[in-house]
Image 1: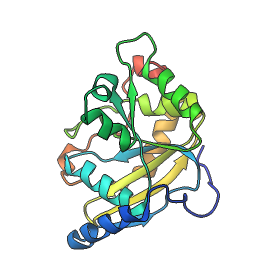
Image 2: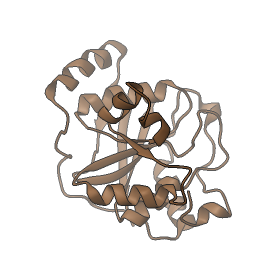
Image 3: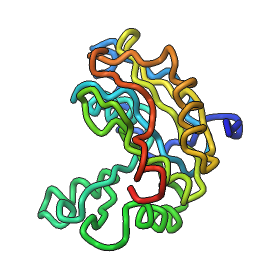
Length: 211
């Protein structure tokens, strides 16, 4: 299940000016990139832990420093909003129809199949408050699309973003979540530790490809 990607890091996909903008921000606040992004063209990146709105800001700054073009999922109605929708799509937003019979997993798997490279970033906790369970959508998207999950950890204790491991799903979500939990052990250093919950899927409906 734990993969050994090809050596080296994924080639940059953003222009050099992205790094030029991000580098002084990171230097000013003492942040750094710890490395580990696998050299693979398609992936689902899970960002953990998510305890504050600052997480999104630092993910954006550090991935700009890495020159990594990432993709986020957004509601189709946002994508149709003038200017706001254009900005979201320009910076990697992928619109999905949540009101149709096609579920998120099916839509995202189809989108992934159309692209040569993609790096979808998802916060599986779904909230910056303490969550007792993770949303399993990220897992089933990767499983249906046959692409790996990359574990990213934002560490406020050393002000760093690191990629810990790359895994391939097996379809046994409970077993795979136990592996994910073991890999994150010792790396859950969020800005607000009290908001960090356990790493486990919600029992019942998320044990199938419906999210």
